[in-house]
Length: 210
Ligand code: GAR
Image (tube, rainbow, N blue to C red; front, side, top):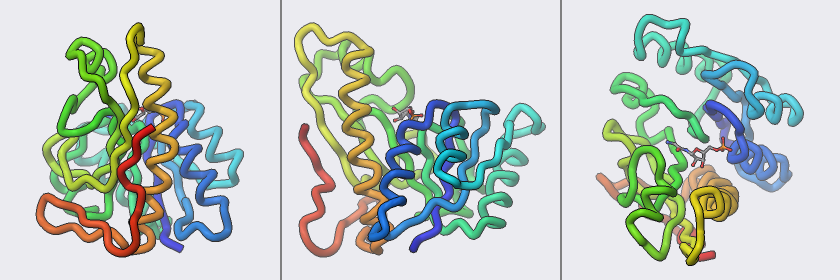
């Protein structure tokens, strides 16, 4: 089973979806370490309840991004991590970290990229009047919220939606999409060719419409 490290900043509901998937005996990945940059967050308690090792590596204790990231990498290497999943990790990462984990680092973002990179994706979707919104799992590159797309899930934007309602609908889709994409990666079915990730083998349901 592929050894996965999950990096979080808070609530950890996507982490929970990954923990639940990895608890299934036939799932091709296992989570060996969960790291949070914020102390005392719900995501750390989720990992503890699942019996998974946790570390808090608080970025505030480091002089610069690079030394914080070196600590992340060292902890994950120590744990034998082969693939890193960012799951609600709210820090920008820099070149050395990305080079170390090149094509071994994936992220979930709450929009249908390339629409709405960055923050406040749900409010911006509402303000723009798009009728489909959703989430994306992608390999991480130096530009924020850019990188080969592994899978996407779309949800409708409904008349009368507010930010919280739309966010909740997208989050439900995230919890389906992230384990599915992790499974594809762990099975070795995702091939990165330049800016494109291609899925090998039988139909993968890596594009979902809810
Ligand atoms: C999720 O919606 C995730 O897509 C988003 O933060 C939320 C974390 O929730 N990530 C980003 O915005 C990354 N820039 P969770 O902690 O419950 O998984």
